[in-house]
Length: 224
Image (cartoon, rainbow, N blue to C red; front, side, top):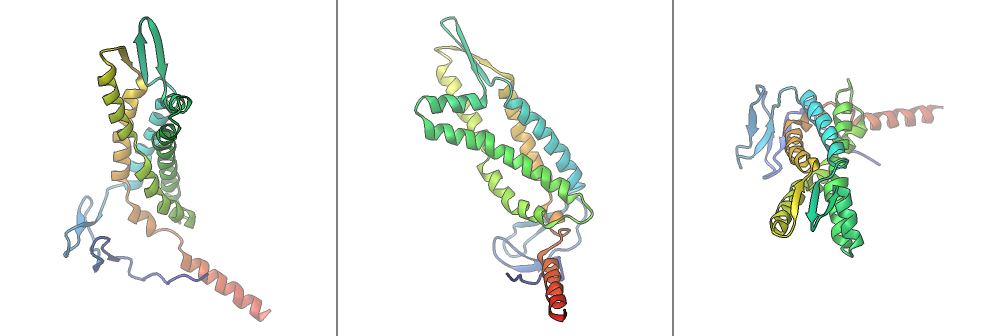
């Protein structure tokens, strides 16, 4: 396996929208650089990105655990009470022959958010090291996919629609998890907004070092 050699000038990048090759200037904290061709934002210099992201990620971990541990909704119908959690709702769909919907709810509202939070926590902790290892870059590649599939807000909109429809037939009791999930939606958005991936990318020990190490080993084997 061979790797392309990285450009020595780390400020030289290509716009993701129009492919214009350009240099990112030195920016003041909070300032942003925009592409002169398409006016899309190329990078924003976020202040204390890793520490802020770590704080928000730890908050998201706590909220996620609470949201999946306590009831989300309670119903009272003809004197009978029932309540369910997020995972319990997915299980209920599965048991009522709505297997595809149940799997989608479980994946988008439970598994994907857990991966999004977990990967971000590992990325931030790895990025805080003096020389972040290459596995941090691997996690950075896959983290956007988990963010795309994390759809807690979509589930919450569906829950609100369902509440409106059944309000005339039953007494709906919002559970603690319902409010925690709304807070979690905004914390996840803040976590993504506070994170500066470029800061981590520039510090990772990259493939060129691995290639140099492999070349050095081949040279030693050839002379021995």
